[in-house]
Length: 114
Image (cartoon, rainbow, N blue to C red; front, side, top):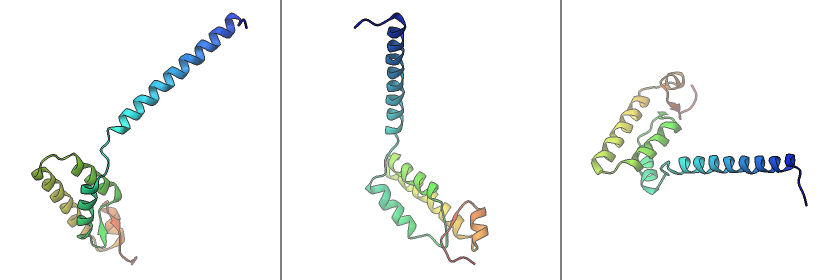
């Protein structure tokens, strides 16, 4: 089968486009793959922290950050510092006794609506 010059250039453009898209996909995969995943240790630490929650507690985003930080810390001292910082956040949220105040402080309300 003989392709015209125009047909060859179109095929070449498609091959180049597919190559670029493949490269972008690989880069995206590698970047997202380097994010630390939750593990048993981080989940246990979060459960331990949730036992301290009151009616007002840290947001899911802050919990996720806590879990990521715990995974990244290498020494026991660093892990304890991360836990202590999260306990401070829990205590800050616990001071909010009403839904509106809780939300205004960047926390989530777990209690009954008032």
